Length: 314
Image 1: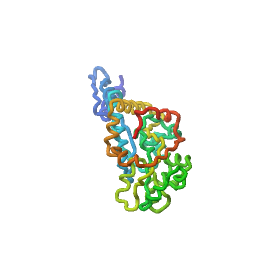
Image 2: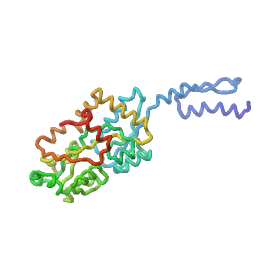
Image 3: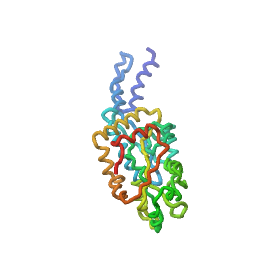
Image 4: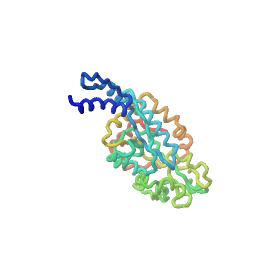
């Protein structure tokens, strides 16, 4: 055996040790002319390495409500740990619109999973986990309005009267498309600017999901939560991953199914600060309900509407 060959075998364990200190190597005597690596230890270390799951966190406009989605994701990963192994959630701090986050996942860049309201297009672009993680709460919409205008909304009794108003919504939100498809006049804007636009009279009302407006009006003197109306449509929020990331999709789905089966999902939903008691706080029984269709639901999403275990029932 040449000197070059002996050197090549001898340096390999050292390189592996530098890369991963968990790897052990046994170097046999020079008379055997080679080094042997404890392959089972290498394999064991790889098997026990946690799966890193990257998710987006806003770097500027911090939204405390995102803690709920993160708690559900963590629950799903914990429930599936016995089958899929350990995990590590890794935040990626970047300020971006919904559409940009979807593209990042589709292109396998920066983040592995997002949570967002579904649409046919989003289900075509990404791999959806078809379990509504807000139990449909996003489709219960109450409005933010300007102070002193409640009486104007109290007088609304019909859908055509509701459609005469101008409603503010996000640039790339599915809600904007839903409202427009049902004859509503919608003014779109950057999500972080919509309350300011409402205050300046750019539109009449800003519909929010039932759990959203309570913290948003804190400290605002000229913006209130409207008291008499509710717009309702089917609006499931799913976890989405890249089309090719079948392993992560199966893991999240399995974990959510286990959490629903053992009741831990409902316990989280009804106790988390973001979602607890929102039906009571919104006083739904005193509101006029205007139920509209969501034409952007896929057939598979519509089929889920028949599964009562997945949805909120007031």
